[in-house]
Image (cartoon, rainbow, N blue to C red; front, side, top):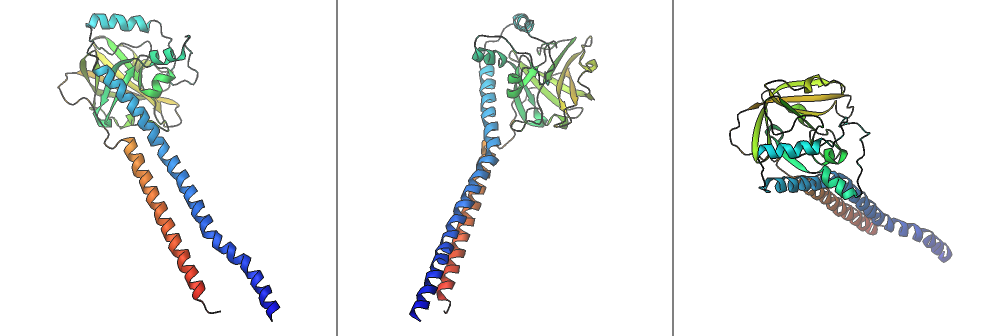
Length: 295
């Protein structure tokens, strides 16, 4: 009888030890899964927040420089730089490479802020860069090479391009929400110009008909890719110059990307805590019932 009892005890002991380890393994697994979820779910918002900070710095630097020039001097400097730019499709994957001895100098030249654009309906204010290089379009809005300057005037037609549908940044993603009659504003050389949307077209990339200058008209066209993710066509949202009535130029979309990331992270953390507490109580109660069960 004693031998059988010892044998039976020897067989049961390992299984009991295994059962005791399972809850801890489950806790570790859940924790790892939740941590991965937190990182993957908040990364886009944190990256977007970093871009927002970079854009805010560019806007602040441009807006507070106070080194405004006469319109004549501004245009002379603008066209002197524009004459050295290479015209290309702003959304093409094959962008011409600029030659420079220092890549930092290239990036800084491509991110030279020449103005600001504010679109109240989209609740956004973005820097405008001179050119449509990949660096410029990843960080803000680019002035299409070969189009008019953004200082405005009769017989001019500036074309501003922006990406849509990027995984991390909005930029012109919500441009299709604009309707005829909506307004947008450009701030350039210390002055604010107002434009009202009067034409919306969807065309092939090779169709430049609606980007031409019109005598006596002051136009600005906002351009992005469409449909979303397919990018086979171009969405053109044109506005004509109207009188500007002073108002709040800067637009904010409410909760920042970092704020959204914090909310998501806190929500996931609370779920992790709840699951761990629930699992701990469950296995604790299960172990107590097993000990109280009559043999």
